[in-house]
Amino acid sequence: MKIRKLLKKKFIILFATTFSGLFLNNFAEATVLNNSYKEVIDHVWQIVYRDFLDSSGKFQKSNWINLRKEVLSKTYSDSNEAYDAIRNMLSNLDDSYTRFLEPKEFNQMRIDTSGELTGVGIQIVKDKESDDLIIISPIEGTPAFDAGIKARDKILSIDDISTEGMNIEEAVKLIRGERGTKVKLEILRGSVSFFKILSREKIEIKSVSSKINKTKNGFLIGYVRIKQFNANASKETRDAIKDLETNKVAGYVLDLRSNPGGLLESSIDISRHFINKGVIVSTVSKDGLKETKRGNGQALTKKPLVVLVNEGSASASEIVSGAIKDNKRGKLVGKKTFGKGLVQSMRTLVDGSGLTVTVAKYLTPNGTDINKSGIIPDIEVKMNINPILQREIGTRKDKQYRAGEKELINIIKRENLISEFKPDTTNLNAFLKINKKDTLFSLN
Image (tube, rainbow, N blue to C red; front, top):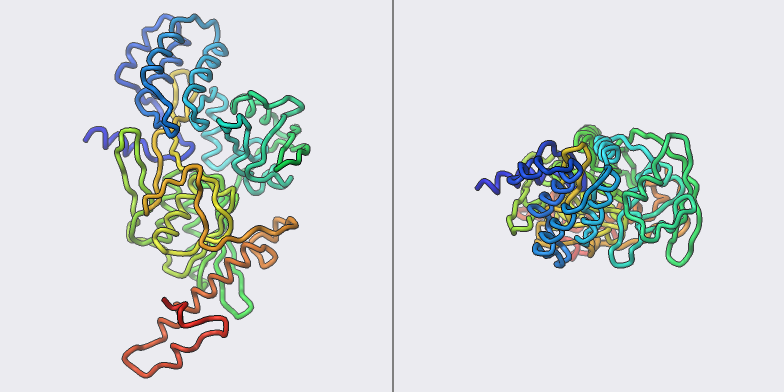
């Protein structure tokens, strides 16, 4: 029972959040180590030993125990040596999401999840098989997004320094810098490589934008775009839906394209805005303990819903889209999602540095583990061949939006027909009031 209570406290984040002062059973041993740098190393070791969920199946506790003896037998003259030892230790886990952050990096990540970003606006992951640095997704409104950086682009070099063998922390150090300075990235997209020079900026990102689109046949569509699941996203989404409900929209297009994820609790809250009852997501720890989150009966709208997704929809985006798809609450339109089904807890270490450690995997309501496989949309639609302007996203010039709007109109029409048909009367005309493109089978 104590374990379950502890897990409930831990499973409140996806990818990044803060945990302060989490001490382990044998942490007292770490505090009396002769070398203070070893204290940080041992703190990392303890967290991994107790909480790490191995998605690769390669983690052996016996090897991890032997590794502790090895790293603590050495002497470290400064923090750089200790931090390098930690990174080398973590490289044995075969998990690109479990990583160490120096104090400045750790503080920046906490700022990032609060809704303020510094840098060029990308999140990266290291592919263990190819050893490539891969962009999960650029965040809309940032220099990377405006420069046309895309999900799954590979970074070959940073300011002419090859990324071969480079870890994420080293890459982040090179990419980030003072506001107004520039960084040159060499990008590989498919078989073509090219350079992009980006300005580093400090940007306060509004997570959610919304508007009303009027269709050709007069329907009012509520368009809601969520760019990142940070601490403000749930409230901003709630405010947007309430405003759109006041304007009596007929249905919603929820745009999660190129949304790299964020906080787990944010994704659950936003799912509850649309899903009244039913399972939203289940998290499973390394010990097989399962915690299930459900709708709380307080959905803000029951109106028809279509969700737009693409290759850059990752993590928290996949929780929301998976919940909507499996609960048959709406239809997914676009391209297969990124495939990040792992939950990270962010821990504060004894010297102010931090550790993001994979502590669980999540399953969609139907029990699907989407890690690396992604979520396949109900209607697969490619994006425009020729890039569109940022202001054209979520308009009829946006091919995926156009397809989503078309599907939403079909759903609205079907629901209107069902509500108009009265089986205890001869109201056959209402039942047959269908556009030429529709058939009776579409009512099933």
